[in-house]
Amino acid sequence: MHVIKNFLKEEEFKKIKDTMLSNEFPWYFIDSVVEPKDGHYQFIHHFYKDCAPAKSCYLLNPLVNLLEPVSIVRIKANLTTNSNKIIEHGYHTDYNNFSSPNLKTAIFYINNNNGYTKFETGEVIESEENKLVVFDADKRHTGTNCSDKKCRVVINLNFFK
Image (cartoon, rainbow, N blue to C red; front, side, top):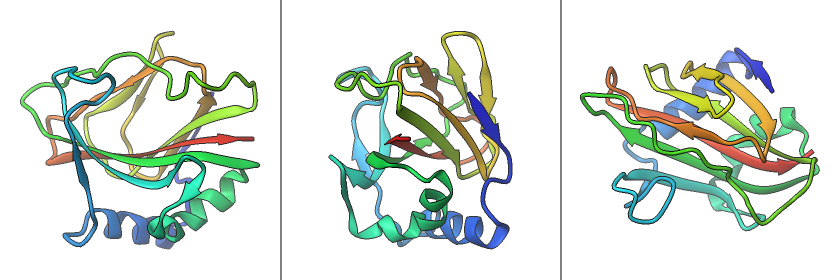
């Protein structure tokens, strides 16, 4: 696992953050987080889905260029809303369909908050803006909401390296 703080140049990060947290950015309601009917909800935005780019994918060029993927499987932004307590959403891997040591998952944190990413092996990565964590896609992890800000926003990337 690799954790990199201040992954993007400040001006590149600011453009992504300001766009994603603006009133103009399209978020879509999903009535689950990990499993259907899991009792949780989130808002998502697909930048890449089923290996195909969406119109908004250009926004992430600085991020993708630094990652240097061989192929992108999916890039999805997740927005979870504030609650009076932190809720862990359940351990999972993003893709069970692929079995390759070259398949990676990365989480890029858009805003500072008291939410986190936790791995089944015990590591906890705090939500700090402009931080990137990259790990093997078969490593089970869970995300959370937050209780100190209006929302927690991350970008989840699945790609071949």
